[in-house]
Image 1 (cartoon, one colour):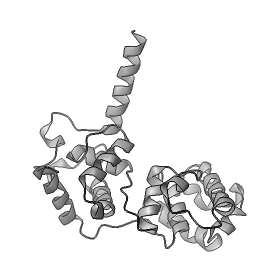
Image 2 (spheres, helix red, strand yellow):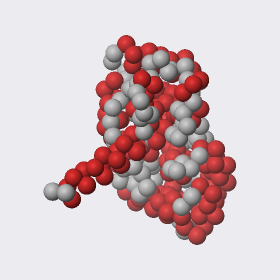
Image 3 (tube, one colour):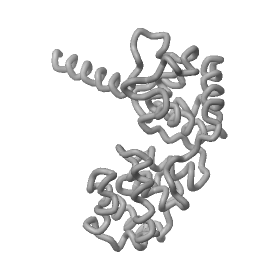
Length: 230
């Protein structure tokens, strides 16, 4: 880690000393369900719907007995019907394959319907205490803009952050970057003028704002065009 990157991490820690999960959950099953619902949805919205959902379907056994038609009304405001389907199917797999207990390894968690690496890492880090850096859209964007990583994929960003950041800070650094992405380093209109990290920020010293998702799409299109041109 170079001095600039260390200054960025120190700055994030100072800005968000109380950063923590903004989703509400109290056990691994609730963590799993809330994180699935949070995809392309705000944590605030998820927190509005989960109290009733967890009251009526408090564990994998209860959820496994449900149908999408029963669950979707609870979670409709969080988006797609497929979320209800995935939650039910994940619960059924937990019952059938994992003895009714949410699994505690990345390999097992990512076997569950609707569970990718990010969701699995959230469950590992915040329900089982396993060091992990879940990379969502905020972490992906902020890490690459600030210069903590230089990657075009979520997977490469995670790998670079794990190599850079001390293991004992992985979970907290995840929250620091999410807080910064939600409060300052917005996707479309980052508030660079008022950002305390601007002196160290990689994007601040370029003639364009780094947007890793857009950059990845652009490079993919360039490769596609080049291949078509022979």
